[in-house]
Image: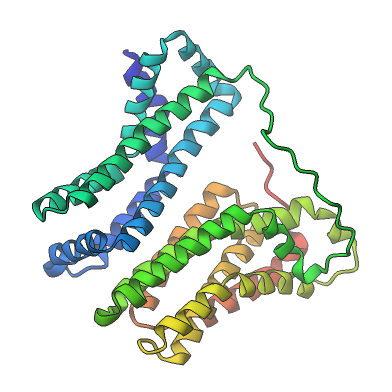
Length: 368
C-alpha cells in the first residue's frame, strides 16, 4: 500500500463517510428543491450572480472558506487524538514531499468546492471575466497550498511550546451578571465567531434583498435562510454545553427551569436582532411586515429548538448534526410554502415540551 492510498483511507474516506448527511443535504438543497426542467438555468443564474457582483463573490468565498475550516478541523482533531499520533512519523519525509502530499490530501477534501470553482471559472473565462477568474483560481490555490502548509506545521511543530505573541491583562469585572444574560456574556468570549456569523448573514441577505432586489425570488430566500440557520446551529450546541458543564452548579441553586428556558430565549432573541433590523430596512418593500416578523421568530425558535432537543437525551455532537440536518430538510417544505408562522409555532411548542419534560432528568453525554 502506498503512502497516498494509506492517507486516503485514514483521512479522506472517513471525512466523507462522517459527513455523508452534510453532503446529501446540500445536494438535495441545490438540486432536489429545484424543478428539473429549470435546473440548468437556475444554476447558470446562480453562477451569473456570483460573477456579476464582487459583494456576492466575497460572500461565496467566505462560505467556501468556512467549508475549508471544516476540512482543516477534521485533520487537526485526527492529529491531536492519541490513536493518530503515529502519523507524526510523516516528519521523516522531506519538507517538499510533505507539502506535496498534504496539499494533495487537501485537494481531495476540498474537491466538491474545487470542482464548482473550476466550473464557475470556466464560465467566467467564456464571458471574458478575467479578474473574477483570477480571484477564484488564486483563492483555490491559496486554500490548497495554505492548508497543506498548515498540516505540515501541525506535523513538524508538536514538540514546541506555543506562546502568545501578545499578552493582554484583562481587567477583572466584578459586576454581578444576571442569569437571563449569562449566555450573552458567554457570547462575548466568542466575538470572532459571532462577528463571522453576522457578516455571513448580512452578506446573504444583501444578495437576496438588495443586489437581487429588482428580481426578488422567494426560492432564493428559502435557500439562504436554511444556510443562516445551519451556520448558527453550532451556537445552540455550545450554549447547552456551557450551561450544563461550565455552569453545572446552577442546578444546585433555587432557579426554576422557566428561568433557564428564558435564558436561552433571550439569548437567541438578541442574537437575531441584526438580521431583523437589516430585513426591515432593506426588505420592507419586498416582504410584508408580518412575514418579516415571522421570519425573525422562525430563526429564533429554530435555534431554540436546536438547543432544547439536546435535553431529550445524551446527544453528542454527531447526533446533533443529524438532528439539525433532518430538521432543516423538513423546514424547507414549510419555507417553500411561506408557512413561517406555522414553523415558528411548531418549533416553539416542541422546544417547550422537550425542555420542561426533560430538563430535570437531563445528564450531559459522557465524553469518549
